[in-house]
Structures are given as structure tokens and as C-alpha cells.
Length: 415
Ligand SMILES: Cc1cc2nc3c(=O)[nH]c(=O)nc-3n(C[C@H](O)[C@H](O)[C@H](O)COP(=O)(O)OP(=O)(O)OC[C@H]3O[C@@H](n4cnc5c(N)ncnc54)[C@H](O)[C@@H]3O)c2cc1C
Image 1 (cartoon, rainbow, N blue to C red):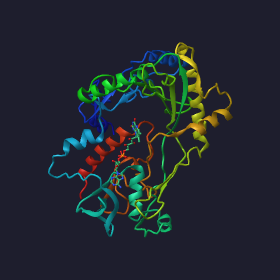
Image 2 (cartoon, helix red, strand yellow):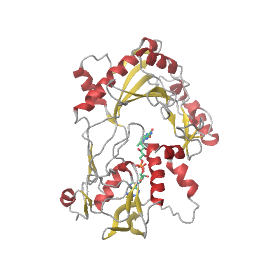
Image 3 (tube, helix red, strand yellow):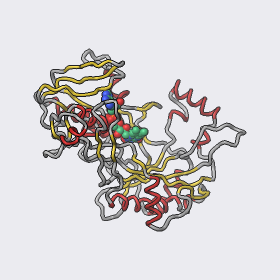
Image 4 (tube, rainbow, N blue to C red):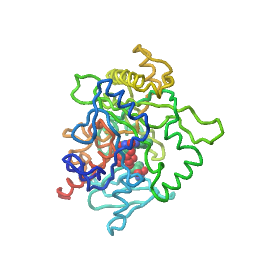
């Protein structure tokens, strides 16, 4: 995968054996402008946790500045990096505000899709490959609406099965929660939200792509192991330099929220699995998303270990100058029971759904290793749903890399 990662990114600090500097997606390191950053690093060092200067490089383990997909003050997305520059190609047509409702089959061959646009049902036909990229929720939804999915479930909702495959199963997401402390000083990000300052800075960012509003406030990230027995990190930490409840405020009015600092603990080695199911055969009905979070005890155990590490970091003497009082939880938690209850009441999915059309080498997978829907002649999927397991980091650039890899693979395949 490494050549495809390198080919996908334009890393601002230059290429090396691990990083690419000539690719499409611009990636920049976080600027650590908040004075609390140095105290966090002191707390991390005192705790014995390691550091890394580039978690996307040779040494991913430890704490270091986060990296962002930003290009001169704007988000560098799949749309801005790949789609927009290609829009003038004669063989590309972009149809906006169109909702694909099903794949059309002639036997096992996909011959097009049906989509709704402005209340009209339209067909787009194809004679070659058909590729679905609607994400880990909607790709399985549309496949199931087309009769490709678990046969018994499809019959339940009144759809005739075309292919019996475990579409929608195996759903994974990262689960995470924040610990928060009240902060003595006003952090630079919250200070920048004073109405007159932010109004000017937003205009500056919009017109010239410069100034504080053209940069993310910065954060420290960390990939660590909950126990030395593990071979790879199973937890991801995020220390954002944003008060979680920061609001836009007016000078002379006492409506500014209390400044805080926070740390997020995120599980990256989850064993609980969920499922995307159809609620009805009508495409307008949203699919059911059943996460089954924490259904495997392992997940709670690792998140609990993460809580203890995060709590010790936030209560470190190194942060004493910034720390006023614990906020969430509002006291130090020692007992497993209390920690578990805090996790159960605060943890949420981190918007990384994946693996609902997993690729793999055997018949339990929905896709072949070439990302073709098993049993079809020419129907392919490339998006988060195709991951056999959700990767243990942020998925966006990985999905972009998968698309680059898929294109390379398909070019070598006969149609
Ligand atoms: C709030 C938020 C914050 C995130 N932050 C990060 C982050 O910091 N770093 C990171 O790495 N990842 C982050 N992610 C996750 C990342 O955005 C996703 O993992 C990634 O975009 C998934 O890519 P995809 O191609 O699988 O699906 P998507 O990016 O969701 O693309 C699917 C596309 O298909 C379209 N579509 C869906 N159904 C249909 C249909 N029926 N007909 C036509 N079009 C359809 C959708 O509109 C969408 O444009 C975040 C996600 C969210 C929601």
C-alpha cells in the first residue's frame, strides 16, 4: 500500500521513504500555538509515554502534533483534490442532487443504476464496470435494495434476493469519549471567537486564505498501547486546543462559557461488530444502523485502561498552571465500576463506519480481493465499506489510497 499512500498525499514537510510530496491531497502538520501544548508534552514525558514527530512516518507510536488535510487554508478533500481538477474531461459527467436507488442487473451483470433526481426516476446505463462508492452505510443499503445481501433479511422486507451475501454485516466504528477539565486562562482559540475578531478573521480566511480562521487550532495526537503485551497501539488519543464548549462571545457581556482543556480516548482495536439493515424496501426509508457497541468485554477493558492513562495525564503536575478543576467527570474516578459507567454514558461513535461490504479471500467476504462483488461479472465497490477491518487510525486518507490502489488494479484486469 505504501506507494499508493505516497502517491495520494502532498506532505508539506517533504518526501521521504514513508511520505509523498507530489500527490493530490495536501497534508500539513498542526501548528501548536496554544501555550498549553508544551505542558501537555511535559505531562506525556513524565508519564513515560513515548513521542513521535510523524505518526504517518516510520514511527507511528507515541504522541506528536496531529496532521490535517488542508491546502492553503481550505480543506483538501477527495472532491477538491481529485474531482474538481478532472471536471473538464470529456469522458466525465457529474450529476448532482441525484440519489441512486438500485443497481440494474441483466443476470449477474450490472448494466446500470436507477436514480432519483428532482422527483424523477432516471436510469444511467453502462457497458463496462460499475463502481459503487456511497460509503459504509449507503453502499450496503443500495446493494440490498438491489437484491444483493443476506437472503433471509431481504425476504423479510419483501425484496427478491439476487445474490445471498453478508452485505451490511461486520459494521465497525471507533468508539471514543472526552475527559474535560476547567481551565484557568482563556485559550487562544476561545479568545479568537470574540465576535468582532472572528467576523474579521472569517472574512480574511474566505478572501485571502490567511489568518487564524484559515488554520485549525491545532492538537496533539497519540497512538498508544493499553498494555505492553500488545504488539501495536490499540488506543488513539486526541488533545485538541479547543474548549469543547467554546462559543462566539461579545466583549462586556458575561456570556462566555468556561474555558476547558480536554483529552479524547478512542478505541482502535474494537471487537464488537454491528450491522446495517434495511428498515423497508423503499429507498426513502433510512437504513437501520445497529452498532452493538461494547457488546464485547474486551472493548470496555481497553477503554477503561485508556481512561486511567488520560485521567493521569490531565491531572499531571505539569498542567497545574492551566488546571482549575475536573469537569467531566467532575471528580477523580478510581473504581472500575465508576469508570465503566462514565464510559457507557459518554462514549460515542467517531464517524468512522466501515467494513459492511468487506473484501477478502473467502466466501465470507462480500467483495473479492479485486473489490468485485462476489458472484457478479462487473460490479465493484471502493469506499470505507470495503475495508476487511477498520484501520486503527483516521480512515479518510486510507480510503483515498484504496481508490488509487483499486484504479491501478482494475487497469490491469480485462473488462
Ligand atoms: C463529522 C465527521 C468528521 C470526520 N473527521 C475525520 C477526520 O478528521 N479524519 C479522517 O480521516 N476521517 C474523518 N471522518 C471520516 C471520513 O470522512 C470517512 O471515513 C470517509 O469520508 C468515508 O469515505 P467514503 O468514500 O467511504 O464515504 P463518503 O465520504 O461518505 O462518500 C460517500 C458519498 O456517496 C454519496 N451517497 C451516499 N448515498 C448515495 C446515493 N444513494 N446516491 C448517490 N450518492 C450517494 C454521499 O453523499 C457521499 O458524497 C469524519 C467523518 C465525519 C462525518
